[in-house]
Length: 118
Image (cartoon, rainbow, N blue to C red):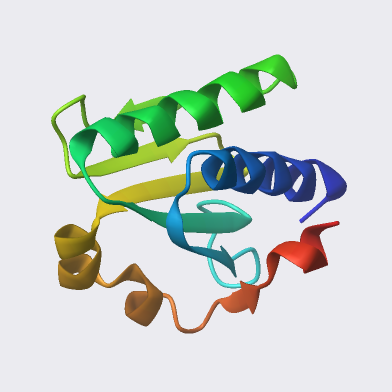
């Protein structure tokens, strides 16, 4: 894990905050998985807010010079996955977040607070 992935996570979380994302969680997975350094999980209240969150994250990270590798899901999805290699952002509807419960699946990861990214 390096400062780049930390900076990416910080930028993504700030963008989510600007769009009033609910219950933003940051899980450091660098020690337990080769997938990424961080998972960022957030909840949107409806498809419009979810899409606004996706757009905000992508715009902020692109502006900072980071390109998305892949986005899974579309404008009508209730779970969108944004893969930036070093970080993976999951944006869910409340119902899907409860159903998939990534926080429980990744309990071996280390929970990080937003302040700790600074």
